[in-house]
Image (cartoon, rainbow, N blue to C red; front, side, top):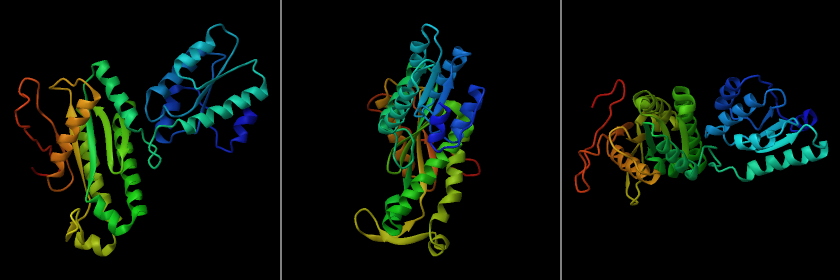
Length: 312
């Protein structure tokens, strides 16, 4: 096993607790994780479960070394292990199986190739999981304003760099505030979904829009940054002043209304995101409708949630 790990040409860290593993895993996702379950199988299987429960670390391939105890093999796979190696497994076979595990992890990784965040199917699964648990949570849909015009002026590569900056910002704020209770997904392009406990909305969303406003101007040339705009073509091909990029976030929760499916939550978050985009600047808007107050033909009451230091 040591020889195989060494052959991967990667830095290795030996840990003694699941807390240490999750702390590292949430900061920088490991290439793989190997668990020794021969002395304390219960602790090893519990650690595997924690890795696999969090969407950010769940994609890390996990291999478990088991002893001869009856049931350990099944328990390891039930915990979420991607591969299980018995103490008595032939060395050549173990290497083959571990190599195959890494191949599978790359092939089956359902994440956005640019940001490495969870994709659409994982987003739907996570919303469904939280609905099944009956916990209160918020689905937040983040979208860049004037991103297409930025791409047209500065190139696709620069636009892709902005996408990665936003992905990193969302991840760092959500995970830094909510740890394992936070989820970040990338729908595609400049569209992101993150899921947080409902009571974390002001701190997370406020920090995200405030930080984005600090970072966004520095993605432009000094001339455009000083002017606060540039001349470019809008979606209809008309030449006009294009403001610097801002961030709009639409938020929906199940605090005042029942959400029946991931599809419904996504649709409502999209509605709120569309409303947020109609407001100036970087903002987040929260859907405050309730089951008691809303009927199918009733217009949606729109709210703008001010961030710290900003007025209505």
